[in-house]
Structures are given as structure tokens and as C-alpha cells.
Length: 153
Figure 1 (tube, rainbow, N blue to C red):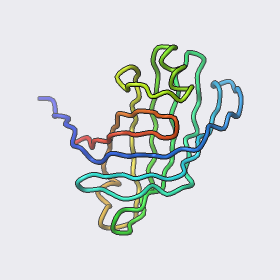
Figure 2: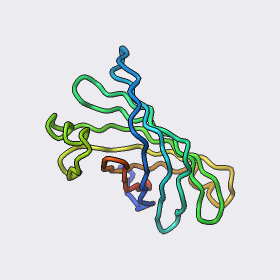
Figure 3: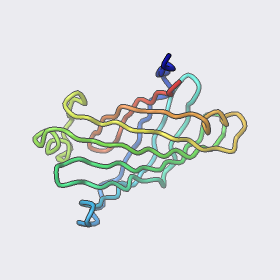
Figure 4: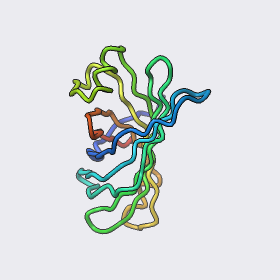
């Protein structure tokens, strides 16, 4: 018998971003850094603010796929600090990616944006997150990323 895998809603994250810093081409692709200026997260067991200072150290590949590597510092509504890393991919038809790059609002159903989320904390109230894996489905806007995260149970 195979063990079941289920998803349970964790939180919705709204991450405000600064303009893209283009670091140029490398042998992996075009390196970009997108600094995080703040944001919020809200869920039944997890809520608070995203502190400024994190970033997405992204690689844009020749086919338009973006490899996501973001680090966030979170402060929960009750004062705990959490470290969150997300890694994933965003890709889609070239005309859709061009519209995203131009800052247009694009229906997230028109492209693929998925993340793997890992948390770290020393706060006893949230230590369960250290042992929890999560996945997320995202959407990009001109100045933000919004994603819904789900724990894998």
C-alpha cells in the first residue's frame, strides 16, 4: 500500500518587490536579483509580516524559464521570527512571459509558477514548521508576488 500525500492550506503570501537588478549573463543564464521590500502572510495557523531585506536570486534561462531562489525573514503576528526559503520555476509561452516582464497583469492560469517552501525557526511555538514541507502556486504582478502555500501531510 502506498502512503497518501495530502495538501493542507498553510497561508497566502503577498511579497512586495523592488525593481529587478539585472546582473547579466552567466553560463547558467541571465542572473537577476529582486529585493523584497516587505509584505504579509495570512493563514489559519500562520500569519504576520514579511520583513524587508530578503531577495530572489533568480536565473532567467534562454527558453524564458525562471529558476526561483528566494529567502525571506518573517515575523509572525505573535512575535516569532521565521526564515523561509522558496525554490521553484516559472515558465510559459513567450508572449505571456513578455507581458509579465512588461508589468502587465496576467492571469496565472496562463503560465506555470510553482514553489517548494522550507521554514526554519528556533521559536517553540512554530518548531513544527522545521519538520514541515510545503508547496505553493504563485502569481507575479508588476511589483509583487502572491502565492498560496500548502503543507504536504
